[in-house]
Amino acid sequence: MASTRVALLGATGETGTSILNELLKDDKFSIVALIRPSSLQKPSVQAFRQKGIEIRGLDLEAPLQTLVAALKDIDILISAIGPMALLTQIPLATAAKEAGVKRFVPCAFITIAPPDGIMLLRDEKEKVYNHIKKIYLPFTVIDVGWWYQGAFPKLPSGKIDYMTGAGSMNLLCLDGNTPSALTDLRDIGKYVARIIVDDRTVNKYVFTYNEVWTPNQIYDKFEDMSGERPLRKYLSEKEIQDDIISVKQALDANPSDTGSMIMRFIREYQFSWGIRGDNTPEYAKFLGYISSKELYPDLEFRDFGTYLKEVLDGKATPVYASSKDSLTDLVAG
Ligand SMILES: NC(=O)c1ccc[n+]([C@@H]2O[C@H](COP(=O)([O-])OP(=O)(O)OC[C@H]3O[C@@H](n4cnc5c(N)ncnc54)[C@H](OP(=O)(O)O)[C@@H]3O)[C@@H](O)[C@H]2O)c1
Image (cartoon, rainbow, N blue to C red; front, side, top):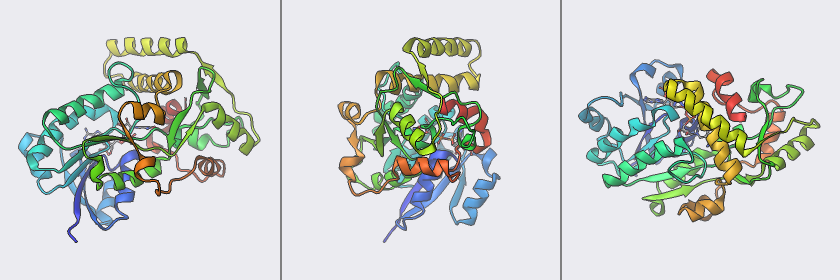
């Protein structure tokens, strides 16, 4: 059987690794990793070569015909590019159209939120989706809820600082009772592997998630499991809005201030899923998403309780290991 040629942008990142690991398990896919020239010598890219993954060096700012040439034999293009480079996908989509790529999965992979004014991160992604629609390129948008890996509190004993970072402040939004959909980062690839060969998902938005929890439920469960009482600091809507205003001011003064940009992403996430309550299956359905629960009722995902045990047992894998203090502390709030 002819294999499906999948090009993956962002394969060295957290989401990209999840997708790569799952696609590698399925013989029907042959994978090309699109790597920017400055990263070609990274140990992770060397490891891809050793696994027999085809590597193509690609500068996303290269002339259009260079991008087209890199995609000419590709059936499906998936992007898991980081949040700071989302708009580089616009010329990539143009090239994918010209190269005859059959489906583009642009980098979505966030929580459910409406476009236009709630989350800058969503709005940047939406610019890419709009471009894809304008050029009539088949696509699938896949959002995933909030990662398990950023959804639990730091413990007073410091026992799980290897996951949360020492500086986490255990912030809950409002009264901590807003439900929000969660997914194990490692399961994202499982969903993607199903979705990209499923005709029902062409030109659709798909919401994949494992379980729905409120922050208080998570803290209660973690208290029971650990025997410790994590600090609960409740953030009001005004505190979140004030933080968003001040990071916007910092970004007006210095648009390349990465720390403020990350803080803006985090506080807008919290506003969306913690205050507005956007990140739920019901709201996803209202916005027109198809649910992974309806599409793949047989798909086996990791449950959150088992994941929390892995964390407590010291067996979980930290995300963003190389930039842990600056990112994981913020993600964990
Ligand atoms: N749902 C959630 O809870 C959640 C949490 C975090 C992130 N996300 C979303 O997931 C998406 C992926 O984020 P992530 O955290 O998984 O990514 P990440 O770990 O930061 O990795 C980013 C990837 O993009 C690549 N990249 C960055 N800039 C590039 C450029 N100019 N040209 C080519 N490649 C470039 C990086 O390659 P190099 O190796 O070359 O640097 C890396 O492979 C984001 O857009 C974000 O919005 C969602």
